[in-house]
Length: 257
Image 1 (spheres, rainbow, N blue to C red):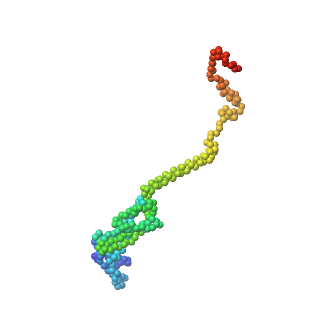
Image 2 (cartoon, one colour):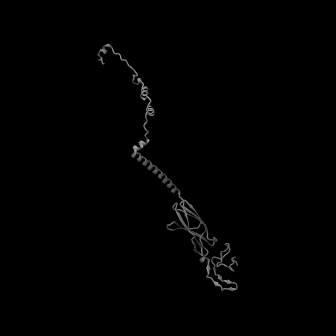
Image 3 (spheres, rainbow, N blue to C red):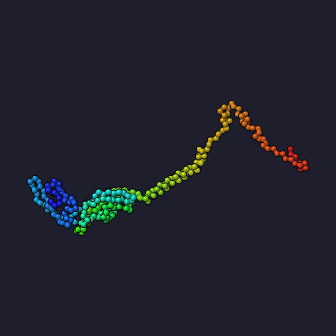
């Protein structure tokens, strides 16, 4: 046939009339009527006429294909391909994104004409689920057909610069408070157990080496050694001054014995 589709002697209960190129296929403004019959060896059923089909009104739009999602800083970047090709002079697709934070309320963004969509304004480090849907607008017959939603996929957003800065500040403040609490605790313990700390860090008393030797060997003349170490000149005068007075003044000076 002209469509290049062979639907004779099929073993399956379906036949794909999708054209192999944009130059072939049923014209979108044509009413199409099909007849179907079954055959088993020499037995043939009567023809069954199916309801009229008009592409502008009865076409089923599938979900976008090859959906690829890249997590960004508090955003999701979505790329996909259209359900099928449409000649620009006959129509175009518009796309809607249904998304929600996991266990949250669903939101819808659109319409978009591009196959690359950026969902921004999301919360960082949160898991979001999404579905994409295509709407077909036929300019030739002035109709709009909504498509089916894609499968649900979930992704986690990345942290943005503000969140990174907040995280660094929180870590720094946490470390500072921990060190301050540790220093305060140590200071409190030192004040509370000051005597014990002083005892721990105080050097033990020591005895003179001569006494230590005497304790090791009591037969040593320790007293004589100590007397020898004491010099008799330790208490001697270092300097003697002689003061002379005149004879008259000397008489006035009282004599002291």
